[in-house]
Amino acid sequence: MPDKIKVLYTSEWRESIKNLPSNQFLEIDVRPFIRVHKNFDKDNFKELIRIFAPECLIISSQNALHGLSEISESAKEKMSILTLSEKIANQIEGNFKAILYSKENNENGLSDMIEAFFSEQRLLHLTGNLRQDSLKNLLKSKGITIKNFQVYNTEFIQPELEPFEYKAIVFLSYSGIDSFFSKYQLTHKIPVFTIGINTTRYLQKHFDGPIITASKTDSKTLIKEIHEYFSND
Image (cartoon, rainbow, N blue to C red; front, side):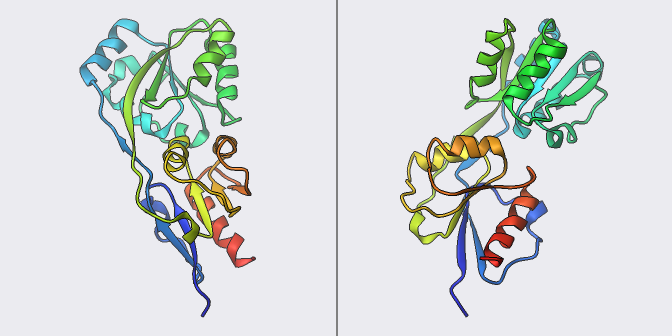
């Protein structure tokens, strides 16, 4: 039997993809490069919601969803939510005024929707400690201001490994890319898989080799397409 094809998966292994059919020639090595801490000043957050009374919450990461649990039901009824994707929108619970998502699944799409529907409203962006300033800058260029509140913290973790041992690498986030390339380099042109076009574009700042973007922005599709890629190789 030929040696297995070893693939580095740089994020946590989600429970939902553990039972996917495996390829007998494929070995997925799960080595997370980030750890997310869902801790924030809940009292300060509740006070901000009470005083600022945001009319629209912006959620550009799944990790920010847990902040919604600290908002009272009466406050939720007065708020709309705008998310980066349908996937995030579908996970939101509560009787909010409206839940919208960007079909473009990127910050340009979010900015356009904010300009079209929420430009005169009080906006609050639930973020992490490593948030990008691109959305804030896009809105500023349109004369729109937004408050940020940090509801999670992302820590870089960098396991010891040898990149040349792998035949492919998987990235699911900007922070995972930053963590990996702050310690390792990829000088060999192995295929690299990503979960979405935004992650692909960000990865191109660090890597000029072949990048395969999953056809849908979910982990199950990504893993299935990795199996298909090497099955057909």
